[in-house]
Image (cartoon, rainbow over the protein chains, first blue to last red):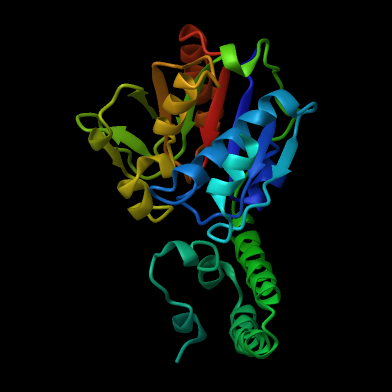
Length: 83
Length: 207
């Protein structure tokens, strides 16, 4: 039995061709897959959304496009609303 | 002036995608992009519809990346699949990255390096180094959590959202052309190590 894996990827063209088992895709700048330096809320939102795929993805090759628009989101509010 | 020179830009985050148009786009595409850029910018200025401008930029980012991607080789066959055998709140999770991270005292990565480095989870963050030419290392040097969310996982561990952060993470280089060694040697080695570590799930940050 293998080990369940989730990847945060920012390169959709590679996701489509590589077909990893579970991918959380965000159109973030290369080098910052989890978010900006010091932005704890942003980083947590991305980590939590990605980890969620470990339990929600039901078939190999699941790609979840995360809706976040880099700086144009209120990540603190998103986290607060989740409780 | 060469149209290519017009796309010369600093290695800042904002340019991380569109810069590939300079390397992989045709001169015709570069010209079309720059020409439309003026038009789209003024449309946005007068209409106030900046979402349309964002879509325009993203379309061209995709053109640029599709060009770069064409030079890569991809594996064939079935998609690997394993499912989590327990709730996340009791699972041992390991952190992996392709960000080219290593620790002070370890051998730095070379270009195309297929080896890997062990990153103990109790590492002092100031001892983590990066050697990777494929992305702007600036943000990650400022806060390693951008590419290796060690602090975020420690928080989630103490909040009980994950069972445990594994004591060892693994770091790889990116932009590796020798995928054969990666698939046949490196990945199985690390998979065995993760099994030995008793890991239930893996989170991999690709840079």
